[in-house]
Image 1 (cartoon, one colour):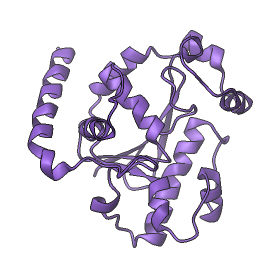
Image 2 (cartoon, helix red, strand yellow):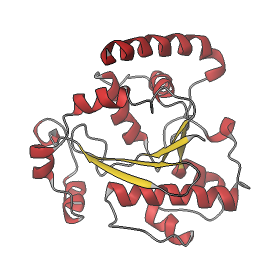
Image 3 (cartoon, rainbow, N blue to C red):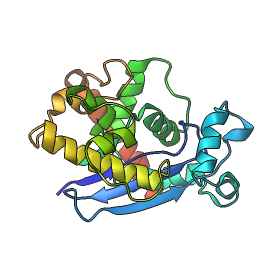
Length: 232
């Protein structure tokens, strides 16, 4: 049975300040919510929206605690790389309007700047995360569903657990929305060719897998070799 992970962040994609969330599930039941707090360093270097910062602070996010006690981002990237949840076709990632989220993850895992070209970004994204479903993108095929995560949850009669704008609560709600939408609008079967690997708001959204399978396989083997060396 495949492992399904949800990723949702509490910031707007800035490297460093992150409630990174993983909800593991194998069939939409018995969800285990794990909320990880990374370092909060972006105030020193990156542009940010003060309105977003104020919103998150009012929602309970403690920036000072992140800076003092947060997980070192490079150490977290190493642990994530060797965890078995990336570079794996049978691990499904569910998210909501997640361009910034996966941009952060790609930057974290590669320890480098993001590619300037969109198609290059999607190529790397597909290597690390072969199976992504963006609930916001799925909504395009769901009649009358609109708005942000909370609005969609209200329309689907879903009950939030925890506080809004907290990674744990938002990610759990994202997973609940996905499975409810899958049942109500997709007859319990998502067309991967149409929806898998697409991110809302980013171009066509997915790398051309049929033309890149050989190269991708070779790149994955190279990355896996690096991972094996890291584990020794």
